[in-house]
Structures are given as structure tokens and as C-alpha cells.
Amino acid sequence: MRRRFTSRMILDIVGCVHLKLDRGKDCWILIYDDREAGISDTRSVTVRNLSDWTLKKWIDETRAYVAYVNAKWKVAHDQPDRDR
Image (cartoon, helix red, strand yellow):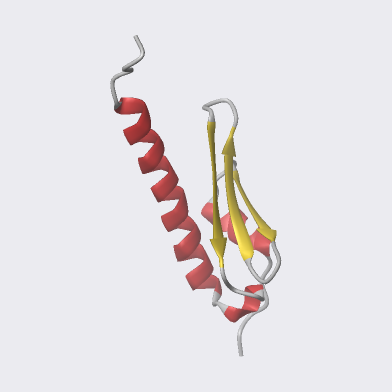
């Protein structure tokens, strides 16, 4: 039997203050929003019900997404500014 969990529990375990997990139509949407740093990104997870995945799978997917956004931001901001 699986233990019941919520999107808030997933976010609390991952611990990223810039992350939200919202329900979309037939999917869940990971939203990374750090306005101060100018970072905004989203990823759709095509899972209808939160309980279709285990808590561990959600945590792994969410941590991987945060790592992806951080790597993408670092690469984008490490590039020389060609407009100067």
C-alpha cells in the first residue's frame, strides 16, 4: 500500500523556494520562478494523478528538474555578452 502524499510534501522535501508544482489539464506542471535572478522555466509532467507515481519518483524528477534549470541558467549566464 502506498502512502498518501501531496504536492506540498514533494516541494518541502526538495527544498527549492523557487519551485511550484501545479495541476494542469491531464498533467502536473513544475514551475521554477526566481524573479530576482531573472530565471523562469516550466516543465510539464504527463501524469494525470499525483499518485500515479511514487513519492520517490516525484522527488527524483523534481530534483532533476531543479538541477537542469540551475545548469541551464549557469550556462546562459557564463556566456560572454555579445551585445557589448
